[in-house]
Image 1 (tube, one colour):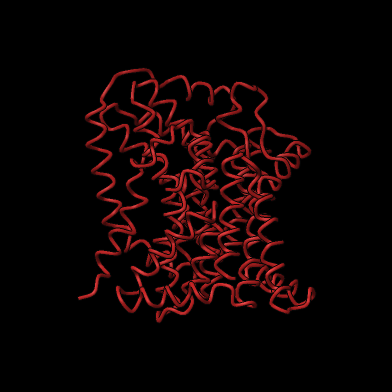
Image 2: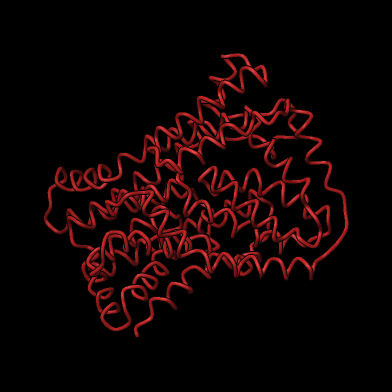
Length: 428
């Protein structure tokens, strides 16, 4: 019975992917399916709803952070912080080093923003346009962007996925970040060498002034615009709580919007809720986004996904798969078992948050410490989901940056991290 229910859920996801239906619609049908399974098992409707609610309550702290991140990504745009960063970075571009710099720049912005989608819509767009102007194939640039945007999505102090993993495993976020920094060093160096080599193979000449000039016409640029980004870095090093860290950066960016960019309080309030929209429509692809409403969809996805976890735990739906995962662990080790499990869940989950939740649910009986569980989730579920073409973790990034789906194999950082950790954790 359990296998048939899971197979039906997979078919629902596949149908929505093939017919390009909304992911939330598939998740709602999945909720009805799993709730129906609970009723079939003899649980009352109130009990099934209680199971689902307990799953949501387990990750309730993340919703306030979603709210703060929506505010942050909107006000950073209105303040000109993102525009200043990408304009300054554009002046450093050299054709032979472009792909390496594209990777590093997307890594840097994703670390500051903590969001792959926000990075793809800002630095991803800029680097893609610069690459095209240099004659670099979008195929190559897309791989560097896809790798870079998930560097920070994995290990930024303001990353929602990092926070979700910390909440699920009951671990300290900053300790997790230190562990991830150690495990990512070799894959990051190897990825950098790969993009450096690829850059010399695709060396061309071109103009890079147009994107910077367009942004400079929209904002008043001053080094003060770096303050919201610097506050994130400094307060992260001081291990200030994430919510306080975000709030300080939002306050600084709001002041810059009012005092440097001369926005009215009413316009700033509109940015905080609905996001930033450039007065020049031609610049919309470079600047627009953010705001509280931009996080409603991801919040709904996490809410539905976490409700599944509650139903799975209460009904024992995944017990069979959990035992199989334990069998893999006894045979090949915990790291291999978790990687195989994350590969399976990333194929059926269609989004990063649900991949994390489902992988954690299936691997929760493995004999490891909470810190090891958190690191393994970050090294598998967080990075494998963007390698699935039909996952929004992949599709949204590539679409935002204007990169082809064929770029996925060139996103080497995403698979070098799990491969490296499989190598270092191999038995014997």
